[in-house]
Image (tube, rainbow, N blue to C red; front, side, top):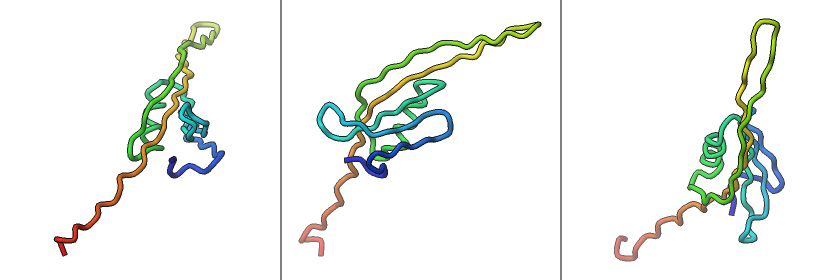
Amino acid sequence: MLLGVGVGAVLVSGCASTVGQVRGPDGEMWLSISCHRSQANCYERAGEECPYGYVAGAEDGHEGAIVSHTQYSSIVTPVYNGTLMVKCKAPPAPATAKANDQ
């Protein structure tokens, strides 16, 4: 069960990552997190979306660079595009009062 994410919702947090819902390998709803800049952004976003923890599934990514040339220099900007699938863990069950503690 996913908490805090509406069905079909796509959430955007700056330019670092986007989140969408997908049907996972177990038939339940998982989060698909697309991240930019670094894979760490995916894991950071998973922690934000799943406050009780998560199970990480498939991940994929690739690094590259964009080279911009000016008349006098070149600028190399590293780029990263990746994805991470996670299944949020449910919140812990509330503690029940024992009959002897009354």
